[in-house]
Structure formats: C-alpha cells, structure tokens
Image (cartoon, rainbow, N blue to C red):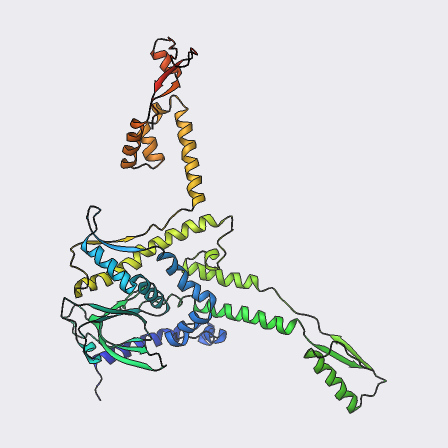
Length: 475
C-alpha cells in the first residue's frame, strides 16, 4: 500500500522527535551514562501519557497552567471598531450578543488551558450549514452562517489526519482535515472528520512547526517528577520512620518455646494494629529503632525555584502564598507586567484575533476593515491603594501651593501633568470647576503685599484689619 504525503509528514515528525529524545540525558563516560534512564525521566513525552496526567494529579503542574490563564483573562473583553468615537459599533453589539449566547470568553479560557497542556488546542465551530455528520468534511463556502456551538478541544480529541501538501497553496504544511472525538453522556465516544474551515487551531511558543507548539510543562517536566519523588518519599519516610519498628533480644538464660514465640508474635500484631497498647514479655528485651526523619523543605524549594525560573511565575504566586508577604509588592508588580505582556504577545494575536477573523470570514460577525480588542483594566487598585495614592497627591499639592516660589521653578501645568499624571481633559475639567467655585477670602501672600506697594487692605467683612483679599482657589 503506497504511503500518502500526509503519512510521510507525520512519520517524519515522529522520527525527528524520536531522534531528539534518544539524545536526551546521554552524558560522558563514552556515552555509557544515560542520566535520564538513571533518574527515571521519560525521554518521549505525550499528551495522553504524560502532560494530561500531570495536570490532573500534580498540584504544581495544575498551578503552572491555571494561574497565568486565570490572571490574564481577569475582567472582560470586547471587540470594537477602530476610531468609533466612543459609539457602540455593529461588531461590538454582535460580539456582546454572541458572548451572552455562547459564553465565548469561558470557551477561550478553556482552550487556553488545553493549548498549554498539549502541543495545541482547537475551537470546533458548529454551523447551521450541516445536515449530517458527513457534511462536516466539506469546506465552509457560505459567508452568511449562523453559529450553533463552540467546543474547545485538546490535541488528544482533535487529531490532524490530513495535511495540505500542495506547495503552491498558502496553507502548505498546515492541517486540512481533523479527526474529532466527542465523548457522549453514556460514556461512549463519537468520531467525526472535520474540515479545517470549521476549526480554529491555536498554538503557543512555536518555532519551525506552526501546527505544534511547546507544551508549558515540557521544560519543567523533570522537575515535576522530582517533586513527586521528594514529597512522596517524605510521606513514605514519615510513615516508616515515625514508627521504625522494634528489635527483640532474648535473654541468654531464657528458653523460647514455640508457644512462647507464637504468643509474642500475637502481641506484636495486636500492638501494631492498635488492638493492644502494652506488651507482656518474659526473657525478651525489646528495643525500639531510632526514628529517621528529615525535613524535605530545602529540596522542595530547589525544585520550585527552577520551575519558577522557567515559567516566570513568582514563587509566592505559584505556591499560593502571595498575600500577607511584606516583600510581595514587587512580585505582584512584575507578575502584572508579565500577565499584560501575555495578553499582548499571545492571547490577543493567537487566540482572540483568530476567532474574530474567522467569525468575520464566516459571516458570524459583520465585516469590519479595522477593529481593536479592548481588555478590562488589569492593574485595578484596591480601595486601600486608592486611598494611599489620594493622600500622596493631596500632600504633594499642599506642599506645592504652600511654597510661594514653586510656580517659578516648576510651572503649575507641568507639575499637574508630568508629576501627578493629570490628562488634558482632567485639567480642563478641574479649571472649569474652579471657575464655578464661589470666591473665598484668603490672607495675602508676602509677594502680593509687595506688588500692592506694601499697603494693607482691611477686610470689610470681618473688620479685623488683617491683610486679606477675595481670591479664587487655584488648581
């Protein structure tokens, strides 16, 4: 049976990965030492056998996948027409309708996680042009489709079975047909063949291969296994070391009969199974073995530090202890910057825009020449942080206005705009509010007295004769 180009493509990729895996862990000593084999590290990692089980059963592996996703998708997002002058556009209205109907954001969060666990994730789009399951193999040609469902799937449930092998095609080397496996409610599964126009293929951290990205657990997989050894070994060590056992020494003048030996064994069995809390023995000296317990924390910290170095997740955030730490403010700031860059460098160009472009292409969203992805504010401040900033601004304004020559050194507008961060609109609004304020009598400054020739102006309102003048508060 002849081999198809698609099979050759898959076979070539498998051979390349196998060759790479065979070189992992081989050290010196003439190639006799295989470090991976000695330490029990698998050389070939797969979605089904390695990545998915780690995500399901390993706490740190799950945190590596979930915490960046949860932080980066915090808040909402919308699709808006560029330069819409603040008015709600047709694409924004339709996106909001789709969000309410299909919970698109939650689907994108799920596919983000699935993409990180494996080499890729997909969004399977159900459209109203399908009359039977066989129609899923057909290319979507209509541009007036109605969305029926969106289903996030992992690489384990969406396998590429046919590739574009025409080098003159702009999609050369990319998937043409997928084999989709859908689990049914009765525990069975349904297998479908789906054309790529009904699929949005999502990858992360790609190099040469645009179909398969790099799983987020790949570079730290050995460290996750080491954590299992250390933590599991610690539990086993405590289980065995907390009660290491006993040693019985028979007195040299005592004759241990078979009945006595059997009775002694019965007492030990009852003692070990919590049926007896004392031992009655004659002629036998019982000595307890010494406990052998060791703190595993230093070894765990080494593994966690290496994992954080690769994932760029601060240790306190990865381990869930960020709150209450005095030195966590810097971690939080760096983490927020990293999350923001994740939005800009991965989530928007690799997840959100591909789904929006496909919706426009299929007629699910109205055609728009230019659109923007609007995210909710990531750096939202807590009430305490807002109060602290307000106090600092008030103190800065007080010190500035209390210094007569301050405006000559640093003009008011520069002070408000550059140092306090006021926008042009905020400055204009503040000036307007000041103009609307009633006049207040304030003491004359020394400079104002000199400008008036040193003459005192008595206040007609209070008759105190103090140097006062009706002045407006200034911004």
